[in-house]
Length: 255
Image (cartoon, rainbow, N blue to C red):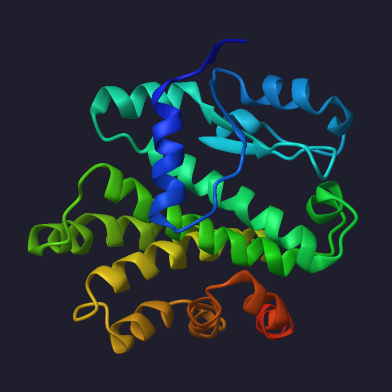
C-alpha cells in the first residue's frame, strides 16, 4: 500500500475553502494506490457494510467513527498520476468533489439529528441528502477544477462544451438511464449530470437558458426539470433539508 503526502495539498485545501467562502477545518488528504485497503485500514469495523470495489473510484471519503474525529479524503494514485502527467489535473476536481461531501456531512449531522456519520451513511433513511450532496459535489468539483487550471469561459470554451463535453455526457447519461433499474443509482447519475449542467448554465447563461435546459432534460422520462429546479432553488443545505419532502415526492415519480 503506497501513500503519497503532497505538500501542494495544503494549498489546494486552502484554495477550496477560499473559493467557496468556507470556514477552515481539519481533514486528512492522502493520495494512495489502494483505496480499498486504505479505507478498511482506517475503518476495519465497516467490513461487510461497505461492498463493491472502491478502487474503481477516482476518490472517496472515510468518515470518522467518532463525531469529533477527522474525515479522511482519499485520492486514487493512478488517477492522480495520469491527470498530472497529461497536465489536465482533473484530480483537483476529485479533491473538491470529495471535500464538498465532507462539508455536507458535517453540516447534515447537526441538521438531521442522526446519532453519527455511520447512521447517515448506512441506515437508508437519508437518501434525499445523498442526492443533494451528489449534485453539490459535482457542481463544486467541476467548477473548482476549472478555476484551478485556468479554464476561461469564452467562446472557445463554449464550443468545446457544445462539440465534446455535452454530447459525451448526454450519451453517457442516456446509456445509464436505459440500463439502470435501481432508481437510487439512476439519481446518482442524474445528479452528476445536473451538477455539471449548473456550471455550464452559470458560465454561459445566454446559451444554456431556461428553454434550452428544459429541452435537454425533457429528453429523459421523469421529473428531471423538477429535480434541477429544486437543486437550483435549494443551494444551501439548511434550506434543502426543510424541503427534502418535496424532493422525495419528485423522486417517487422517477421512471
